[in-house]
Image (cartoon, rainbow, N blue to C red; front, side):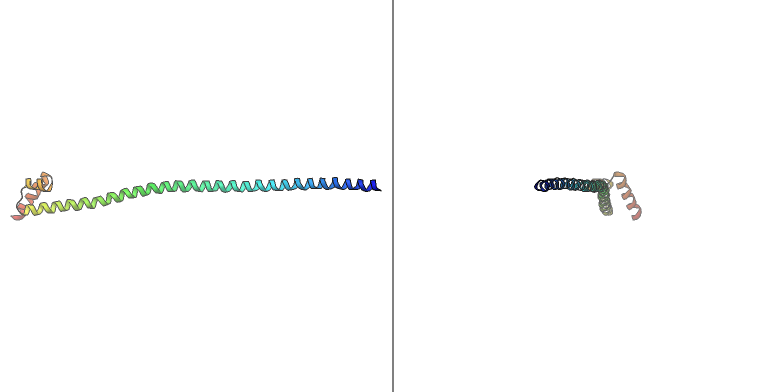
Amino acid sequence: MLLLSSLSMVHWLVISNVMLLIATIVGFVLVKRKYESDQKVWKQQTDKLRHDFEAMNKSTFGMGRCVKKLEQRLVESERKPALATSDEALYQQAQRLVGMGASADDLVSSCGVARAEAELLVSMNRQVAH
């Protein structure tokens, strides 16, 4: 009877070890599947983030070019009124000088207008005066 009970005990030890081994293998397979599933999700999320980053990078670059063009247009538009205002002031000064009797040579030297423009201003002033 002692032999039978000890055989039975060995039998139970083998069965329990086999069951423990099977449970370990099943657990390992389940953990591996979960890891692979998580890894697939992480890869998809990483790919989406990379795609979004590249799209934002391209749009930022495009917006940078647009901003640069707008800045150039703004600088150009700010220069034009300044040039027009300074030209206008020169011609007003030239008109005053002509009204005081300045010659075309005087206008060229003091106002920096072209000779043809200076002669035209002097001629127009004479016609108005007559």
